[in-house]
Image 1 (cartoon, rainbow, N blue to C red):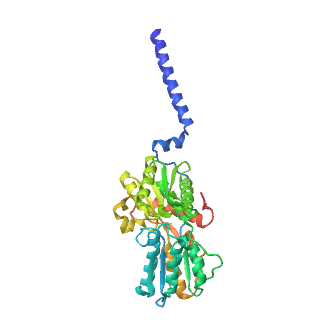
Image 2: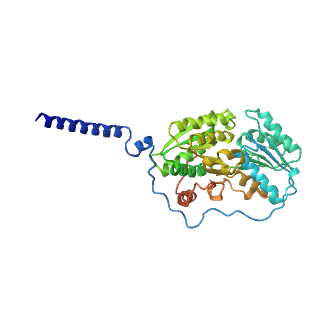
Image 3: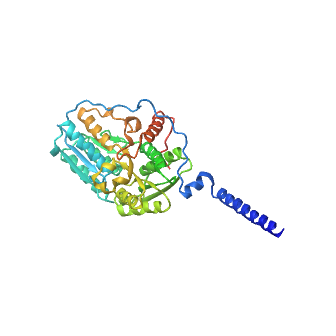
Length: 380
């Protein structure tokens, strides 16, 4: 009898333990939420079907002679060689030189310094304009205020401005992008590449432009895997633009997210993104690049094996098309926004980590965005 009672007691204790564990799982989120903490892969939403044909517009392949142009590029901080935003603009200029008969000596490239005075940007633009360069392209919204002033001083000079507009300046053409749409697809990629259903985002500076990347990325990741966990970190606050050129801080930010469990990190941090890639390589996780196809960028070649994809912000296309339109004297032919529909943003497949199945899923989401069935937010 005593032995039987002891057996009943043991069974009761075991049952109580199971019930307690179940209650704890329920209290901590249960289901897929607890899987996230334990490192399980995502449970995915049903993805949209890929279209049979592409909905994107074809590029205009007509030949243009731009040999008479003198072209100036005023880069944002980091300049040519940042493996990101500025290098994408540089690629557009290089292609224009190759395709349109532009003489290399008729181009000039100048770069901004971190946290420089507004007067330095004005001097840079004024120097190019006074030396006869036209068009002049300001690579980055940071040139908006200076361009407003200098464009008024040189009404016969054509100016292009990446990422911003100058109200009332008829000789300034805005070159704007739907960064949130490309970042949505980066979020889908991150969800499907994550083994823990836990991903991260590192932004360079906490400003509205970079928040567009964050907003699209988080929306895309959660569209693909509704219970995914997303870490978010900005390197510097608004006003401190060193966040775009501080690889050690980029590495530190990424490491913090990796330590929390993220195994795919998307960076929109300019040259600081090199540090994100370094952190990913050291930890054996994956990263998603930005602006350029960073897998093919020489300055990050030592970490390219961790780059699963890059969100392509086709500044190269915008710069090339703007130069072409200026040569034809038809700036009205440019799109108001370089979005998915005109291949102004997108994703790369270099490195072979985006297989045919995932690419089909991405094309399905892309088609729904183009058709307006998915509205991508541009604010977090």
